[in-house]
Length: 85
Image 1 (cartoon, helix red, strand yellow):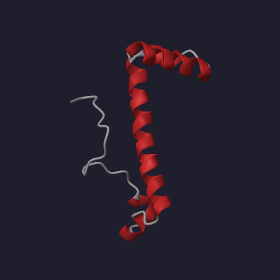
Image 2: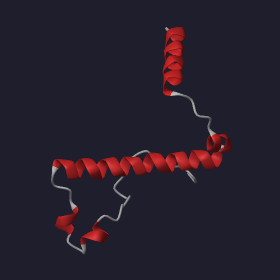
Image 3: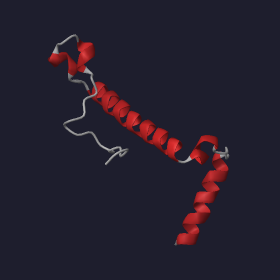
């Protein structure tokens, strides 16, 4: 489907990490816990940022979103949750 972004990484998706390891495949694999976390966190962050970029291109209203204070957002969410119960 044209223009569809998958929310997951599949076997056919390459993030070109090994290009920066100078051909050493063993050096490309994250070994420690923090390296694995950083790798997956950055991969997921890229997916989310790309999705927002597509949304902003599709719906222009997202480019000029108004700023709402966090407390206002929290109280609105609480009121909506109370109404839905």
